Length: 334
Image 1 (cartoon, rainbow, N blue to C red):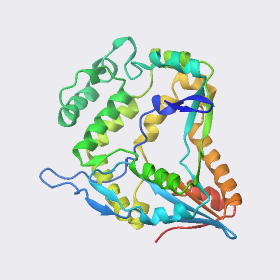
Image 2: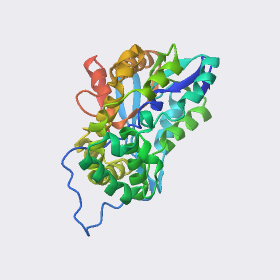
Image 3: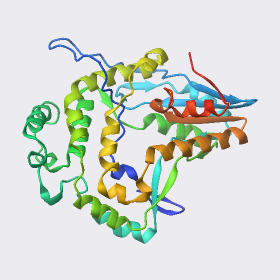
Image 4: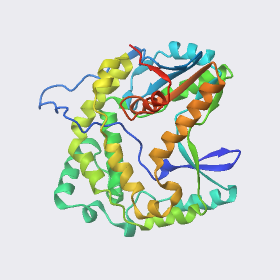
């Protein structure tokens, strides 16, 4: 929760697990005894930037990815130069729920226990026996002894399992890259603009209480996490290396069909989310909001710098494809 001029802000991430970019494609799992992809270390350039233009107005778009190699140091010199020359930095689109000051304070206690199953149920009670058996094997491999996680809803238990797997794989899910861009913008006094939208929550305590008491159809998310975890970790190591080395060809060739969608849908298609109009069609609304902000920035500035997740840059339904369809010229880095 961060303080803003409009009061206090609750990120929808309170209800949704992190948006890891995991493949459910055809990456083969390494055979026993064969080392997995070695995660690179040291100073690395990261990917190049995409160029969006109309006339003399240009927007440079940088793609972020998580997770990244824990021991990698990003060489941000190229991005620093572009940010310093820009009149505005467009931050990644995020949906934020704004509530009043006093409402925020009274809602805080109700957030405790939001990850737990209703009626204090444990995983063994809420998932099929074969799925639970698979869970116990992977939990022992990546998490170890932790009885508390057994009380988590499947969607959140899967998140904890993934985080533990990332740590053992030499990967880190953090915001260091975005934080560096923010620091450069502040240092050069470049305006930073939110590109998402605000969600108005009339009764945050009721929203959280209803979520805690409701069942969530997250078995698909949980099962997909278990079934693809080992191959996903290998795929994420490959992707992390490709991002760090700026290998656009390899990044472009990766399958971005994601577990994230199944897990996000588990929460957003729950009865509580369906009843809350503000939580509907989040992904579509974020895309629409970003396109509007991007066009405004391109019209107002000679040079704009924008940050997007890499999966929102590539592909026919990407954000940049949306700008291209509106007449902007989009050029990919080499």
